[in-house]
Length: 96
Image (cartoon, rainbow, N blue to C red; front, side, top):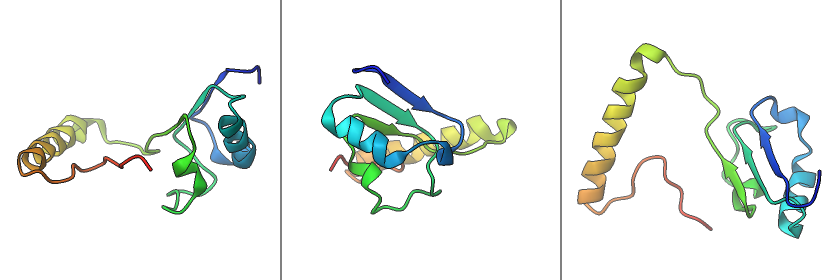
């Protein structure tokens, strides 16, 4: 890819050379990357992708549309409760 490019993969994790992507991000050749799939799912907590600079990893999941907003509303309410109680929100990972 051209220097500074943005790479996005929402297809299949097995199609990406994850070590190569990580190296390209760490060297600065690749400007940024965003993936919602990986070779291993769920991606193990010790996987080096989690600490890769300029890599955004989103959850690879399906949803049931009729429950989507109900679930989002419940998550929002729980995270507000946690914020007020000075607790860690759900689905937030601290940067390494």
